[in-house]
Length: 467
Image (tube, rainbow, N blue to C red; front, side, top):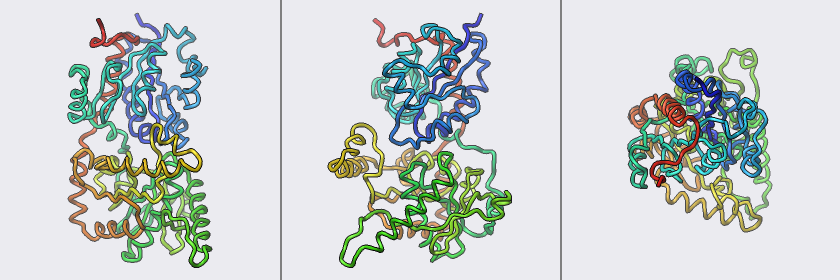
């Protein structure tokens, strides 16, 4: 006899967690949902997006497009639930109109502050499970912890988490990479000669990154092109970024550059990231669907950059080298074996998002900016590695450049790797070895459903807290 519907409530908030973790887990939950058919008549999947300083604002749209997701709870809706207990009507309907006390389900933490997941679980009366690539806060409150690897499991044990509560499931980020396309044919589709080196520009997905880092990367491309004329560049956009955002960033960069030129002799322009501007256009072959590119940027120095939202991972895999910011993309590039120059420019530290009270203080007028600049620099001093494969291996597999950077600083490193094919081959092999093998999403989904069956979808007091 079944108990009606059961919900899997997935908590995730940043772009990397939504596409890199939630997407593959939802896919495997749907593939394995028959596993709970003897206990529940139907499986409902809801993604909750708590507020996050690293969010782009498009997470709800992207999460809603994931096949198998029944509902998405936005940050504002989550805050209403937290403060007033108000649940969106579409979620209530999914519960079959039952009283909340009769709901069954489980909360899966896939990112953000662990407290969000625990608050949701307690309010709904669901057990909570956390996936983590690091240590877990409030670990005693989770019924189970799914660790990325033995290193994470070891840290959890040192924190006092019982061994029987920990399950090593693997690197979930790998399973978020689409393998639908292959690198073969990408260059020809873009009109790039097969023997021409192609550099992939990945500035990030947040508004500040598109506004400041993308024009900075374009400036790096201009310098590289001066010394290696046959180099081509491609900008595969994140699902969270539209072509209009690129156009707006180019216009803003043009305005900033114009203002700097207008500074009188002896005056001082506001220091920041160097930038290149240019024009964004749609060639005829883009409009007819002949090219893989959706648009093309022509910089002021005449450097061509293809802009595409199609076959993102195939484009990345076909690149000889990538230039990116820290984040989940470093794991994706590593799994694909693409040598990468990871940049951490501190030219505009006030634009770097932080978690906790530091971000709030940084928004205060007058005093906020200098306090945040100091907080950002202090935070980075404590971080030995920023690229995920480097963190996993505790060494610099792929280069990282940090500090107050010029475009020339980054271009020199890009040129060094472009000229050394043996170094790129060595980095490629080491990157792939660092990331492990796929399969984590299958193990996460299976463990979540097993816990759902074992608990019946209701919270109970963990053993170590029972007296």
